[in-house]
Image 1 (cartoon, one colour):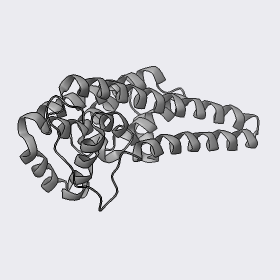
Image 2 (image 1 turned 90 degrees about the vertical axis):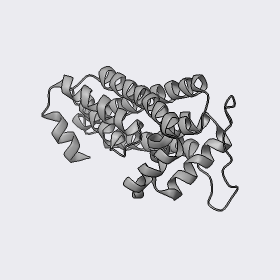
Image 3 (image 1 turned 90 degrees about the horizontal axis):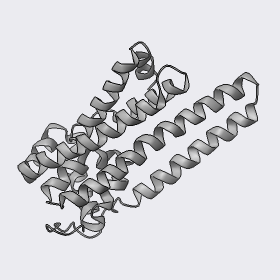
Length: 218
């Protein structure tokens, strides 16, 4: 991540925003890319004053919502054969086991898998194509997709931006206690979000995934 942050810092702000939107957008279409790493690195650059946090968050949200929508359209058109091809091309990230886990999350939680899936690497990649392949109603998908994308993009950006600025201020004042508190607060917030998100992930060896019928969000 340090290398990514160093590389982004050498680019004009406008290019950084485009990269954030592009990488997250392509990842959301179903292609394994380091979208979260790019967002975190850009948010830390915003804390250093290199870029503006509101534009980083906006770019990430646009990439997430548009990318997921494109992935939904592709998945609906290509169906399960498309997911199988993706699995063969990216077996480490989208193999049969990962696809089964993601599909089981949709079968159990419906569109909530799209919302909280934004905080889980596996579902962040598969949510759009899988929702389309399973014929999840698009309106429900879009609401969950937009809400999850906005919360994830703005929440992650401003959390890291605030912590970065606070750490910089406290370091100048040699307030190590304050720095420790800020780090612990960040870890605690991230742990809580990921705990909520991982509740959607099925446990191995439990019920087999059931298909999602059109017109239902489960």
